[in-house]
Image 1 (cartoon, one colour):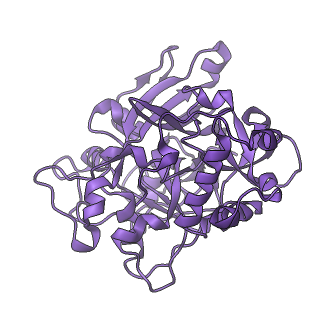
Image 2 (spheres, one colour):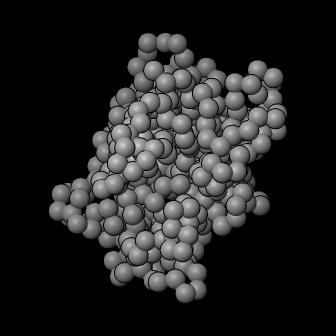
Image 3 (tube, one colour):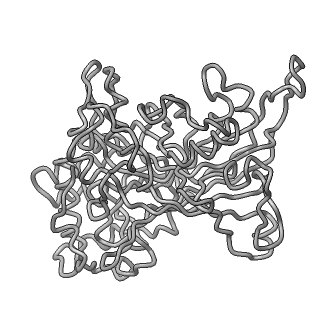
Length: 437
């Protein structure tokens, strides 16, 4: 479990002025990773670190060989087209590189002159998925979301008996995960209008977003070797923002008996930035169950997890439409929630995923599932906000929505905020709906 060190000193400032602008959320205390290249170029994709309004080109920095020891080894791994090689090295190398970059980017650093030419403006870059994602698993860890959705279908018994005992998850599709996506409305079968009738077929009519975080795996585990809870976070590279879009009407027809298929595999959008667990150390919180809740089974219980297994990460969903953008209106805020309210922790997800010997690999992605809060305005999906489409939302410019329409753009953001500490941003997962093909 990551602990506080000199990189977390709230008084640290960078020689790059934009890094000290709290509104940007990319101070020297953050240093999130991405994979980028200059926009509209055919240059190779390469890893970068976010600082202020710039990206430090880590591949170019590696060619200058400025560091030694584990930091040098970690930086050398940043000459790949993705972050997988770095992810595979483990926490000691990750921490050494973070420390070296922090010292290089602080006020008074003797490396300023050498690093300045290696900075690329974020506004002049394009981004790729930050790692080669071999496998994707989506969980369902928000008790508030599961209860709200379950109540729509089972008012008297919204949660299934297993929910409070086992982190529910399913394996998803990795190939359709992207950044800054524009995707066509999915098409598929829908439930027959009457029992025993012929299913419908056509464009999804109940398209929804899901506010999630993604957990990127760093070092993996051999097949057959489980990861214990006390070691689980050492296998996590960092977190990103995730929108796991959902075609609710397709899902209602197809999900039994094996779960979602076409209703989920058409697109999943992530932020291009990964914030490391070490950067999040100042925002840890106790992981506790409410009074009366069952305690996890022994393999999912541990002192470290209870003391500081949760993270205070604020989440927000906003929506713009073709009409609002044409009128120059600001995007509408749909909801705000917090990762702190999840029913299962990051460590518990990793531990449960591997308890039967499943081998995780560098770059694998675990989705948290929709992260809703206890209040109605903290719902992480339109399914909840509109009560299954029964209560339309009225947007500030006059349009209404029950589910997403063509031209709608959803932006999911995340940040860590507390008094006396610089704001940390996760960037945004932005996706726009195009008409069905």
